[in-house]
Image 1 (cartoon, rainbow, N blue to C red):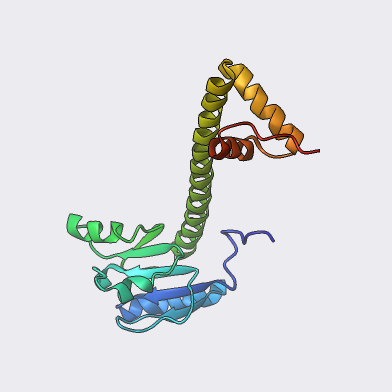
Image 2 (cartoon, rainbow, N blue to C red):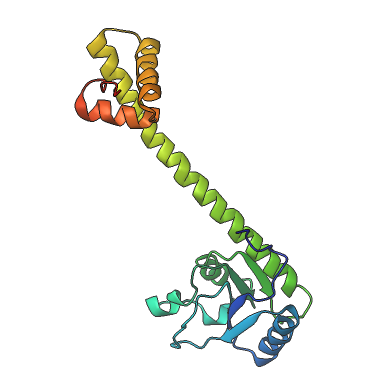
Length: 195
């Protein structure tokens, strides 16, 4: 299943936390044009769905309670900035916004902020997945290194020969080098070939 395009917004769900009614009506109008379903949020209100994006007015900051923070969900956040004071910007940065809009809002810019937010969220997710894979590879490299050192010591061979023995055992048993290395690390010796 392919991921939705950041440019296609129809059918997305948004949680909107805006204090000013004029700004809220502009967002409502634009969301209706773009085909975005939205729910207005008030402090203390429960959210019974997972929003794809959250627009939050900086007038609601700081979000202090866990319940207030929980409404942000896992989707990207778009901050609505009314002032550019360092203290207010610090509160906004705690939300890790994917995009922002400047108040008073205009209809121009909302689509761009949404697209940028979805694109940033997608790229951030991909980077996190890459980090997880790299961390797994790093952990497996340690296991392989430990196995190579163990084979070097037990067979009195150099590093290339020890790695070759591990690789050959992996091919014979149709396992990965990491799997064979883990077996060597737990058993203390090369596993015997089966078959």
